[in-house]
Length: 328
Image (cartoon, rainbow, N blue to C red; front, side, top):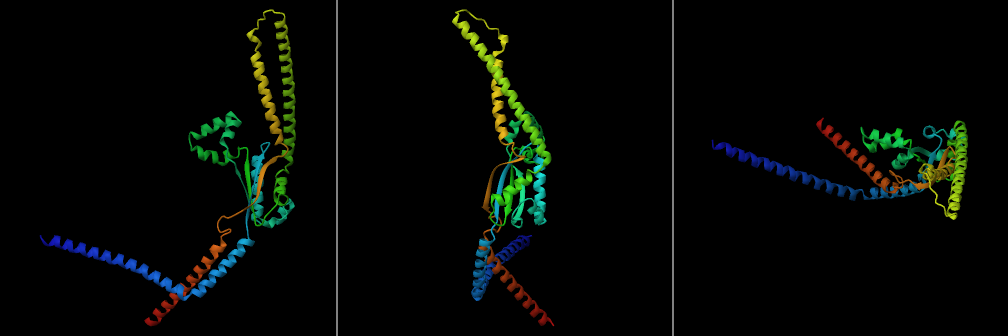
């Protein structure tokens, strides 16, 4: 009975000793690896230094000559042309991927081979979307009951209803408004169907403005007549009683609403001169994503890594060949 505890104690001591030896071997292996790496660098310092210099030089040259630039155009699709706008941008992107320079030249892009990518995304503005109409608010509230509100506002069916959208495209060199922005916008505004819609829409807006002006003038005439009546009665020192049914307050409220509507209509007319109205654009922002602009750092490390990989493979092959030769 007394031998079991003794054996357990000895087993624990053996386990601790083995664990200690393994930990010591692990750190010894790391030390050996570091020492061998230092020796390798010292032996191959000339080759490694040469590869580093070549990599830096080549990287600086490529960073200087092969720059990529980002460009953005904020647009407002009018007359229900949002789906049309997205379809046109998707077509352009497919032509760029196919390297169809003939098509790109045909729509006026001066340097199509320099155009590398184009895409469109909505500018998420939930508050303006809700304020546009009460129906939008009710719809958003209803949809958010069964799903995450953040996910809903970014979904494609919802996001297409936002007022503004961002067209982003990339070029391999600097560009100008004449070379890229104007041809793209001209291409987007070339729909004959939406030109007819635009014409009728503007006519309707102008008729609405004219009708509102007539109504406002009539209200002003009524108010002036009423004011003259009040002033005349005041001069005659007679008491005048007004019936609440005259609804004078409603007339004034109606006039204020019409004046506000006139202002909104005139502001809206400013953006109706194009099917796809550009609000602003930003050109030639240098792209530093991925390895763009960082090749002077990436290439030296890449060259040295490839050299070490090739050298390690060569050493491994020689060792295996020697082992096979000794086994024969």
